[in-house]
Image (cartoon, rainbow, N blue to C red; front, side, top):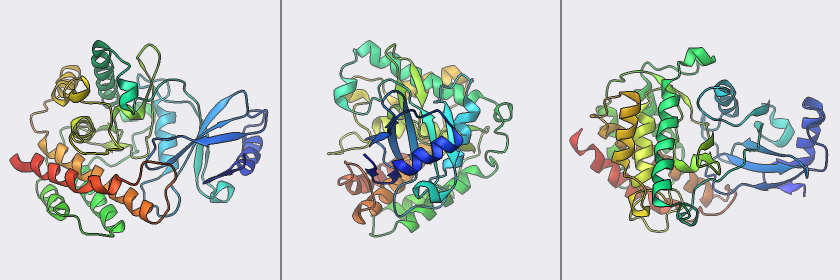
Length: 340
């Protein structure tokens, strides 16, 4: 099978043979991994071994949002730390090979819990244990000294939050195709009330349960989707995790955050935050702004996906309802900022 949207297997094989001779030993076949809503992820096999290939989405690409080199670099740097990541094998920045930059990493076996049918297989105690492990890995990530793993220049922590608000405001403008009630108000209120960053850390940028691979022992085998990683305020990861955990409750036909949260007998977002505070010693009393920003960021990401979907530039299923999620998320973001 050599006809796959966004991935020319003949060109990939030629590149692998040139740069990693002997890695692939048979004809390649591939499938698109479902669940990704941004960068495209493919599972590639030669009939014996399996690898994962990541590339930016087709068509409309927002500036800086799909940097393959960045994602490859942070995972390579974290290898051997307490944060589990897949082994990276190759980075290709040449658009001429498959039409876009891409990288190759080893396949990590396990389960990605992105559906209620999967999470409901876990007992209630298992759901709690997995939730706490998810938070522990995030706390471990934030405890790493960036310079100690070669990431001292991976970002600019000074002014990080202000730049984040500006960045996602620009992303919103770049994907503008319709009016969304309240989104400009949310943007402006966030910009007017940016908190002081207590400390800088390696930030994942999209940390949630369905961005990790879980082994049979319910331990986290690998953290995935590092495309938005940088150095910045670690509380942005916490605010975003809380939004993914409970922010989609009551939103019908939600294809984004499914099978987690209290309604599925998982701990509450508050319990997750308490665990993080216990593990890290952080003071989380001023987290409302970060939750509001989390809602804004996800709303902008989903609006970008909706923009590409309406122009037939997405690959995979589950995109037809994404546009309907944006306005409810904006409303919750404004509610989260009521005390800010």
